[in-house]
Length: 212
Image 1 (cartoon, rainbow, N blue to C red):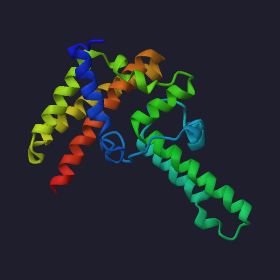
Image 2 (image 1 turned 180 degrees about the horizontal axis):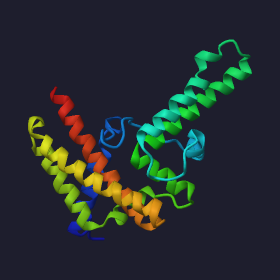
Image 3 (image 1 turned 120 degrees about the vertical axis):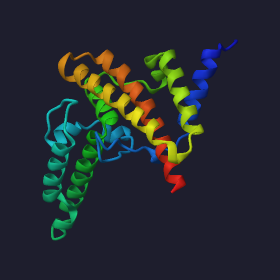
């Protein structure tokens, strides 16, 4: 079967972005101060909003999450329970791990949105992200990636700022889709776009870090 130029371009983009190290994922300072790993299947079944004791909505302030996290860890930090029984210490360890996982998940906008969709019974199928964002967006992302690769680290700031503006606009739209209109379909499209942009952002950071 013949592949169209668009299909080849999409595959090139997907393969290129997938090759980026997950550890290079950086959160945006304007929206989060904690980078987070992708939740594993078992722990992702937990309700991270309930674990931290915050409302189940997308529009959460990082300061609010951080306050809840520190309050809970002040109570459940394993170092404060060394005098307890082995069974109790094991429970405390699991509790602290679940609190930390919840904080990491909710601190990063993309992970928070994916978690919300999963809890609402409408998870994102990772294999269909290219369909969710559309060809035009994929072409824009591929062009942006080429620009990042061609730009010296010392000249990266304008591209980084432009990407932050794009991310910020999508986050505003995502807050509206989740918290105001309850439009899960629109939210899924926006989340897919954000995942591509966060990968591009990580590429920028990796390039700038390597130059230091």
